[in-house]
Length: 308
Image (cartoon, rainbow, N blue to C red):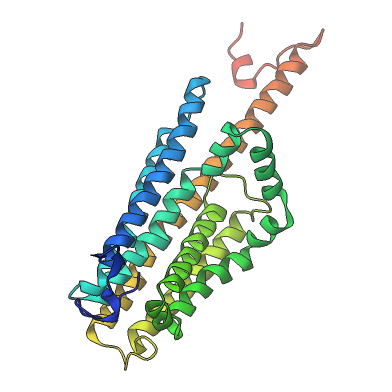
């Protein structure tokens, strides 16, 4: 998925894969695999929705749209990163794919509430296993704010600021593993911050805001270091690497701004619902008091002054 700085042809970034006498470009294999993976995710979500609809249950259309768009962006991100080996500006192209795959797509997938959908449509042993997982010690550990921050920023820093970037490019399996980690960390961050799915031990709004600020600062530091010093072992920051560092910084800012808007919009809605519940309770208390024998509604002073 990285493909930084290699020309097409017989270079290490374009080794052909033999298939019984035929040869397939690894980029093609990666793109086809990503498309198939997205299709499987879409099909699974669609089957669960069909089950809900057969029962007459409703499901927000916005969540379905978020899942569909998230799967599409993830597949496009893989394709863009894989094609970076043949692009005229390979590192910039790689960063664009990175932003789609590990930041934008995870946010949309988290907003689609897949865990809630599974809980509503699952049954028997699979559903019980999911419930145990959500309430288990492991889930409570990985959803703690410091752990989420380390997984998110640590993966990004290790990939762009250490020799891991070069090693991942040389070993495709390692490259896939690193990107899977970063995509999973991005999903976890979005789920904890703004996702509608149940999250064990989710911090309050203040704790989540602090988490978002810390992660955004970490992203900015990594992108700034890439822009200033380039990639490890690449001989300094070329114009292409500097442009990639800028894209990494400002593209990340856009996603983090979206997270902030969603976080505080959710807080505003929750506060409004809380006030409405308080009003209903107060109105019910007054109504119950007036229903008692011998209790009459108070006469307002301004109204009493006009009575004859």
